Amino acid sequence: MSEATKTPFEHVNDVIAQLKEMRHYAGNNVETLTAQWLLFDGELKKLKQAGAIETLMTRQSELHDAMDEQIAAFEELLVKLQPPPPAEP
Image (tube, rainbow, N blue to C red; front, side, top):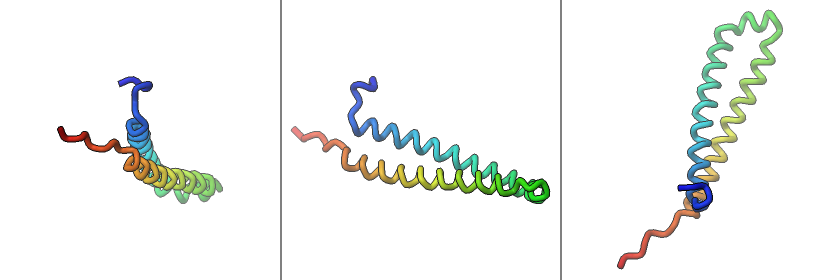
């Protein structure tokens, strides 16, 4: 189905799927960064670079939370846009 022939329901459903994929990768990034942080925490503090990593981790976490909120909002919209079941003959 081409983009031009998609219904609003289908477009919102596509956006939800993309956001969920992005959230998945964002979660993996947070886990990877956290693992690196724990591994090198002492060294980063000695180099006075711990604050920069903490800031990145906080921002990544905020992005993840915002994506969760937006996914929930789109899922609510999806319920409203769902087409009615076909009429029985």
